[in-house]
Image (cartoon, rainbow, N blue to C red; front, side, top):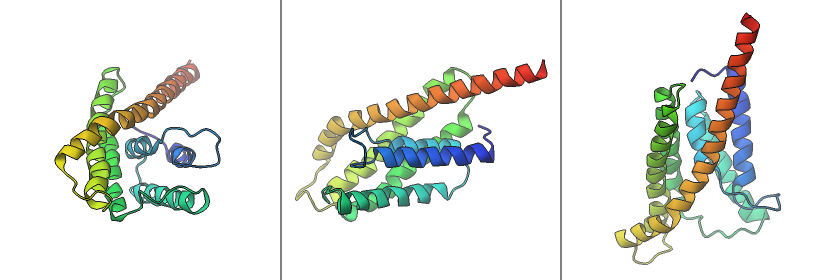
Amino acid sequence: MNISPRSQLLIAIALAALMAMTRGQHFATVNLPSASWAVFFLAGALLKPRWVFPALFVEASLLDIAAMQWAGVSDWCMSPAYWMLIPAYGAMWLGGRLYAVMHRHQPSSLLLLAAIASVSAFVCYLFSGGGFLFFSGRYPDPSLGQLVERIAVYYPRNLTNLALYLGGASALYLGLHAAFAARRREVRS
């Protein structure tokens, strides 16, 4: 995907704003499903600078800390396992990078997007959910059986949230791509 530096800056701002609006308790009266997984995937797919990954992780962490400090959100998830979010979000980021390399402007790319996003999300959940189960200290005797149960409960919901945001982003991308292509044809005429 060939995206201009100006467009990349706008995309980065939009992704940071989307994460801020959907991550936990915030200023909105309606809590939207978390877009964090989609933000990291889209950042990997659409943004070239590598520094965007740590910047987004810092943003996510600051949002979590702010939610605990000022919004009364429980600190249940803040444990040594929090650091497992780095490889978890890294899986989403790398999935986005892989998709960007394989993307073609044809309908079959949507199937590729779904496949890569699903695998990336599964690896992400293994690190985030599995990491929390085994390393948070919140569960006295964690087991693989518990992990399988947690995957069955939480992974489908997280995958649905991811599909919601990636579907919206794909529709926006396709619409903008078509509009710019039509504009280029008009200018050439």
